[in-house]
Length: 191
Image 1 (tube, one colour):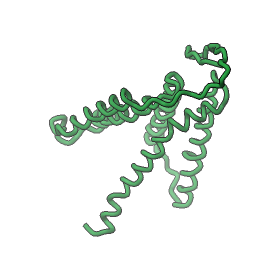
Image 2: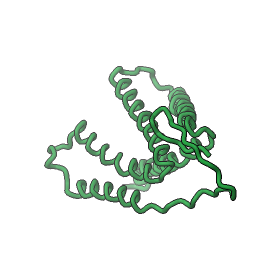
Image 3: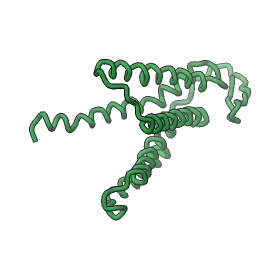
């Protein structure tokens, strides 16, 4: 294989690592945005609203520009549209549940550990069901099963033994905290 072919064949890895970087900071940035909304009950929904704006800017405008620059045809088969919309809905639902999990856990890094360990496992099973391997289930190698076990174990270990954040700095005079209930039954503590 020539150098050009090797570079081209590894391009997917660069893009995958860029996704790892982007999604790796997603939860931390989202939780920080929620905290900076200065609204203990509705801050997470306000933050998610701007995630939606970002999705529009990134996932609607950018592809339109690329399609126009590539002079792509605008034939959009119904089945492709349906599956793509379904994928987008599941992605947005997942992002919304990440937001709720971060709120319920008070921003615990364990949330993203569970998500990023569990999602590849779900993806593997969904891919096998939707696109069965050549040779059927007997073609699945033990290394694949070991990888699933290691992913689950890794998510568990990272969640259980994560470093604890430093305690929040409290003013010298102790403030009395009050509880505020959110519409989804979660309780927020408001100083």
